[in-house]
Image 1 (cartoon, helix red, strand yellow):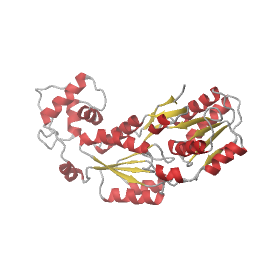
Image 2 (tube, one colour):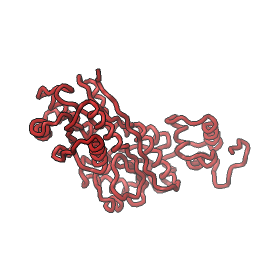
Image 3 (cartoon, helix red, strand yellow):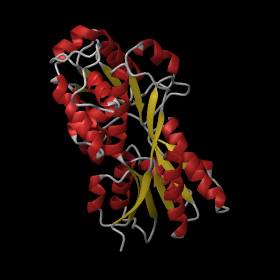
Image 4 (cartoon, helix red, strand yellow):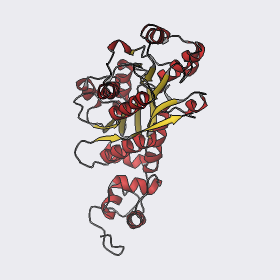
Length: 351
């Protein structure tokens, strides 16, 4: 128990050089809890908050990034290496990460890999060379051995995607269950021939396909593999996507040749292109076609058609990733973690 009048342990220095780990040790809590108390990012029990606040006061704790670098050889910068920063999804996750790591004295540095394994490798190498405090990576490269050589001993958390066999903490959505729920809702509304279309095939997208296929199987519907299609993975801005016609051939194929009665989009980027195509070709939702997508993007609320969306908890994804990384950067030792963040089904613009 914390005793306000007790002598400090010999290994804790009662001056401004005290670390978050020291505060956590004195209060008898985790470093992540200390960060939550400082930031107010998560509800903490009053008695626990009191312990942490007393420990902070006793140790005169404050963040000193320069001193931290001198002590452990690392900077105060956390690299956020993202596969595609044109996707607002990762910007919102980044905001949640910053909300947790900033009060702990760290700065978030965004890097866009643009779905290029070569660019990603360059970003990671530079981060390690500059002794970044830690990394949160949405990986393009799926060969863990290649990433392992690049990352070395730098604290790291994989987010949204994870290479098979990776020996790092990982934070993912419940992709399979979310896609299963979305497909089930389409079937409930009468769909019998559903296309699944997405920009790329990676482990996360594979999980979503499995959920979609499970829903079909459980309803006695055939999986038409010609209607599970992938397009160009190169990132584009939303303004470029309005002009581009990258997806038109895929959409024409499943609608005009395969005669699907529903489309399930693997993410919000494809949903943007698909809904634009449907609008341009006067294809009505839900009269002509049902539509579902992973991610409830902010712009979907202005679409004058009912859209079934599998919502990912972007705040929790970012917060949990940051929490794990803070624990690793503080030197805490614990088993490798795979955290799954629940998705939810949202019916947008539904009458």
